Length: 272
Length: 272
Image (cartoon, rainbow over all chains, first blue to last red; front, side, top):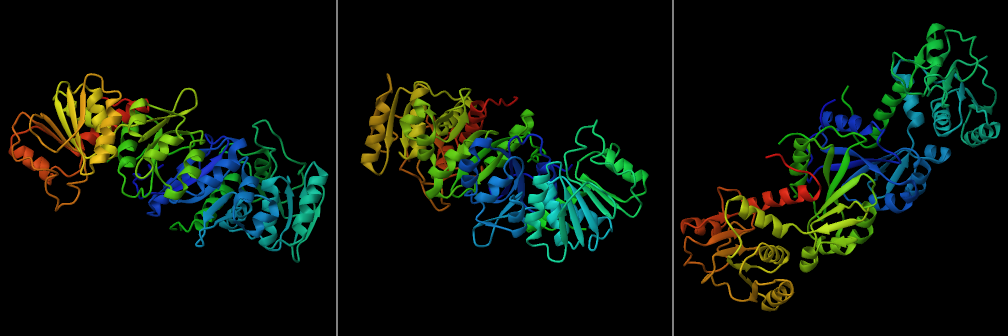
């Protein structure tokens, strides 16, 4: 990890807001990217108490040398309501995870959880367009990923959640702007699917098993898992997919894809 | 200048607030001191528009990982009114230039312009106690320095300002808690003085001459000047004092003394 550049009075600020923030890795990641890109900026953690977000974040956004904010739990919905303008894909899932100051001076919010995952797939040379997708888990990550898969051209998508009403709500919301893509709420069944994504919390604990019974996976199925794990200790789903000969996309890939997307959102481009 | 340490989610924040802030040197200075002291913290510039200070600073002070704030122009009086508790020496001059979160969770303000100058004198091995002082300029710096000189035991002090009413106001305010020290507003006359301090803006421009006529300086007079200049391009006053054989204390010395005092205020101690 390269050290942050020396901070001066001219250094531009980016922040990550959350409660807590001690666990975030964004300061290291983005400070290193700013340094590589030759941008005189730092990204610092800002810990806001959950009950005070609506007092503190609007005031923070008035800092004249603050150019961007990453938003983590539990503030993604609050940040959407605080942003002056919001991308339709963020509005669709009711959450933003990044804010930037626009040329008009207004703060613009967008959501990159889904875009990051799609970029992770594409970066591995797989295609998304035309696939028949199954997304497990209809929380913030799942609905954002389902939305991004629709935007990237999947031919059909089934969303599953143990809470059936929640799955139906996400399906209904996505159907409003899904174009030719058929969106349904359904069971966690891999039959007829060639893209399976775990966007549930199953796999976060070392002791977790599979998020659903996928004994029949064939090698043409692309398997993704949002859970962030070291490469040598994959989730049960990723380990099983690899044994079945399936190509995989992990939480690490999604994270990398999201960094790319957010840097571009901030107007900063990584060199190849 | 050593680079700032890598910033993580656990890194504690300090800020310098001002309008503008691009000119400040505190981020470099304090980040280097934090690194030397092994403290995982950074000090970043935060540019607040002058009209928004009372909206933005109180909200900033709610950031749970913010431990201290340096305050520069034009916010020193505003910051005093925003602080929950204020040191009497800061109250006396109506301004604070540093805030820290106290053990009780409340923000405490103090003023180190004067303390920094006195430390600068002491660091050069000169004594302050018992001297007969003349302070030129009764703005924020001048009144803070006059107050600190009283606290450090000068036997008498004359404050001078081209605006006689301003000088009288400062003299009156300081007299309330000056103990045995005789405080007067008077002329810029070096006769009978053995400590002369320029706390006016005269000397900030390269073309500036002396802040007053001091043709008669004798070598027993300690001469100070708050104006920050490189050592090889001293103010006219410092150059003249050196020619007269007087010991001198410069803006650089005052700045160094102030860094020491503020680091201690923040609970951070420089190794010798």
